[in-house]
Image 1 (tube, rainbow, N blue to C red):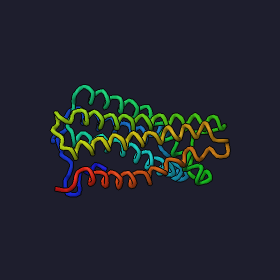
Image 2: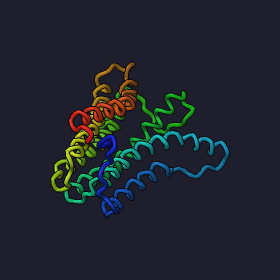
Image 3: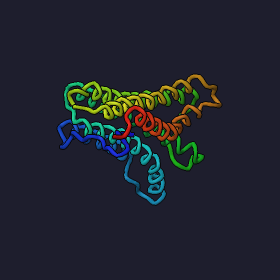
Image 4: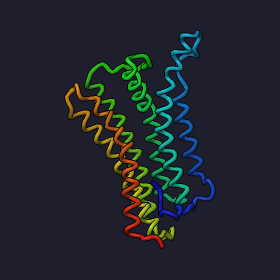
Length: 236
């Protein structure tokens, strides 16, 4: 996404890092450290080392999710360079959610890798009942939906500042499309929660597998966005 036109690149208004960017980067870096640093002792033997390294896939997957949202905020900041009160409040909300979301994020991925590997990848978090599974999926879904909604709100705020930012019609349309796209992404978290509480026990894994649909949604939305833009704003 973030394509204003076939031959036109998005305007970059954030020419230099401001305090908001610095604070956001530091917060995301700290969240990544919370994922990587274990409260357990350093491995004291070869088997313990191998067991510890088995946690790497869950860390990488969790890191990728955090990177996705950090990059989304960075691109928004680079494009619009906003540091007014709504931007600060929304960014602060994003950081708060990230800090709360970081452990449920790792728990979900460690449990997923353990499930798919038949227990070969370790998971220190035990889910004993279907209700516990539903609650964990709900916690993850709430965090996922909130972070996506905040990114959507940041783009919506930028769209409302279109006159102040001297946006062209193309850029205003693209900004609205980005806000819509992130709102739909957040809807995936809501869908996951609905499935978690609506499906029978034997179908509960579908409430997690539904996130794989985002791999299809992204490219499809991008194509629709570009085609709609070409119709509304023919190339000069």
